[in-house]
View 1: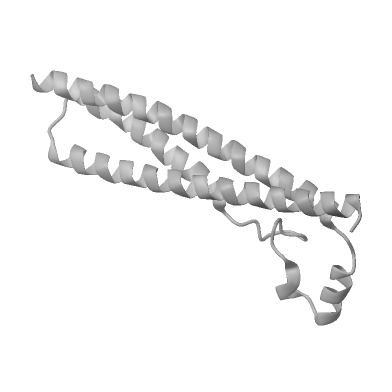
View 2: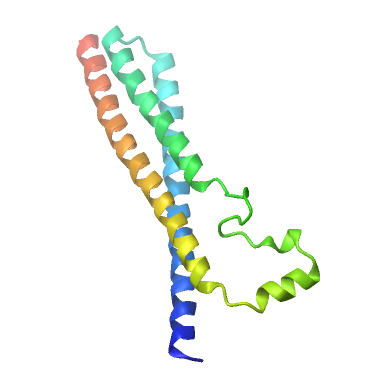
Length: 151
């Protein structure tokens, strides 16, 4: 096994692992956002709050929904186009096409494609985290307004 072959194998495994880590983080954040939305719905429907708390809280909920949309977009499989990212085409190929395809070393091309995919997923995850943080701040403000209005 040559140095180039070892390097390509390691890089290919590393970029695939990075995609898996990003998908795991995205799934956890999506579950967290879902739990937040359920909790907010439960509290807001049972408690009478001042209008200002509903307005600020509503903005927070909108940001959480935007974060959830970004997270869903980040984990959505890319199955369209001529060459789906990170998805073997074996299901659509004949035995001869599979044999021909596997006889070529396309790891460098795969590394480049998967790296772009990983960066896209990471950017969406980062934006969703930022939206979730801002939403959390707005919800805390809404709670303070609600508590202040209840006094």
